[in-house]
Image (cartoon, rainbow, N blue to C red):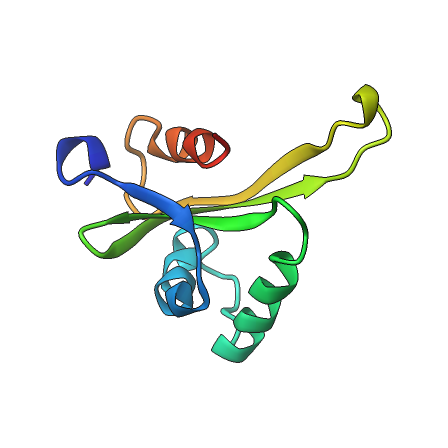
Length: 110
């Protein structure tokens, strides 16, 4: 269900306690990909969180994680030294929904 037609979607940074729902969401992105153990996922999330400005963002509707994306902020020597961001692993449990994934990624960066 697109968030606009039901309960509002809350977007926030993922915490370690979110990993079970987050790992269950990832097969919607690449069904054939292996799912890491909770221990491995916790270590990877902790490593990512050490990069200033970088995070995994989740979209939650009615206590269910329905969307996610990863933002990595990279220091830069061009553009006056301004950092830039890469958004990857945009996944949306709702499937094709008229752009929820794109709107989610955009809101995660604001």
